[in-house]
Image (tube, rainbow, N blue to C red; front, side):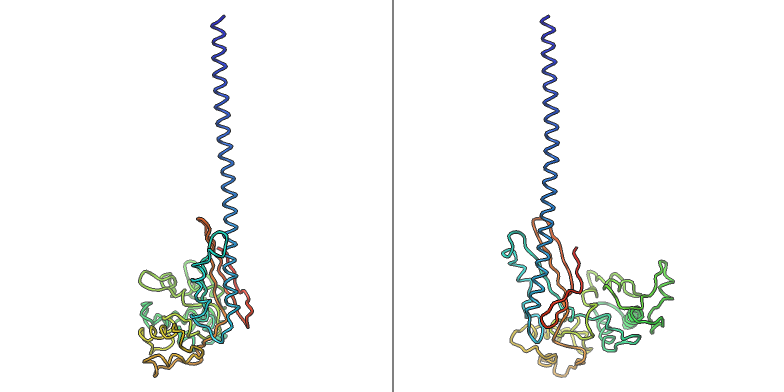
Length: 322
């Protein structure tokens, strides 16, 4: 009888141990599930806060441009020094910080302005050819001309091939055919669909820049000489050398120099005899690209858009949240 009682006690102990093990396992699973839900909630919270940071940065960029009331735009103004704002942005927010960048689209080559109806805009055509002929892009003069003709055919309204360009007959004969658009570009990435524009030319390589950084959909056919990159400055005239472009850049960065007139470049030492078509350059801009990135913990979210400024009023033309 005593043996049976001992066995019952042993079985009871085993059952207790099993119950405790099961309860422990269930508790651990519940704890893991709870922690997972807490982490998901925290990530969701941080994601929302990071998105709000990036949008706040974009609005700050709009405010900087709206408050800029100079008669001309240059890289010496507060909107062009947005990296300084980025450096102390953590002081503006309870948590996280922003990275803000503002680019003047008028300092780039306006692709859609290459064509007026079915005809070339000769000023932009010559600018584009000079640009593509720069040694940085490693293209021959013929290749540059063919690419510009192909861009015109992609944009113009007719189906008549321009010079060495390309119309429907070429694109419909590709392995994966598509029609020639015959309308202005809606996004700059469309350039990759045009004959002659390779990914290396568009994005750049380790040894060459990408044209995507120097062209824009916006603008009416003039370049802001105060904000254009050195590469664009060289394309404004076949007489401008690397050294002259560097001297122009140094001159316009000196806050003591008057940049209100597009002809200021003639005050740069050694450039008195250089002539840039006055109808091609300006010192006033109205279209800007704002890129704002919000950072919080290990998260980042970016907002990018283009705004148009008119008499202090800012209008959003595009808005993209990555």
